[in-house]
Length: 184
Image 1: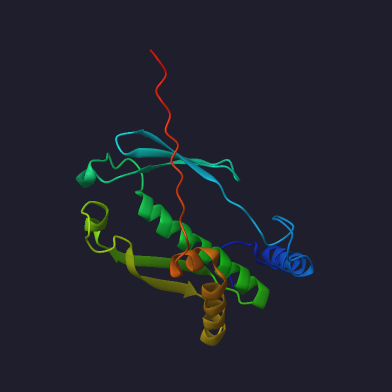
Image 2: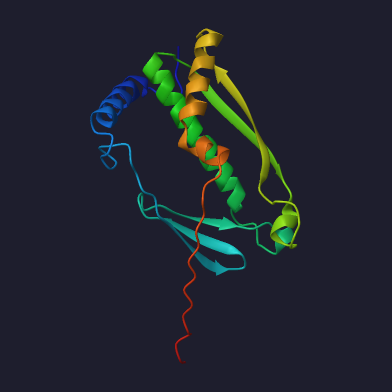
């Protein structure tokens, strides 16, 4: 069978090694242990465009708002990145479990859909503005038995940090620092 990538043997070895390190030292920080910290800095660059700098990886990207809310639509909007990130994480975790369980597949595609009520961020006392549910459609091309792929799906849904983040509420804290503009 042709695979999406020829990385499955290497991925299987990597997954086994990580699992052993995480089990052997559950309190260690990443990359040796299971605990990781992420810091992302977002800087407004004008016209409802934002520059995102990912501290851990060093990557940068732009997010933009749609024209109908006053943005320029020059890049994906924030919630598209949020969904794409969560489902991209799921795709990777699906591959990890497929490699671990020896379930080959030729291709993987996930489509995610959600609805939200945009009044929530503009009008006080309106309905919540967050996602109202998520529908995830998976398309996997594989000769593997369907029950094996369903097991990979089950494990990936249970273990994916991106899906887990969408699934459960968490505290959000905010700290505002106000600085006076420098004299001209």
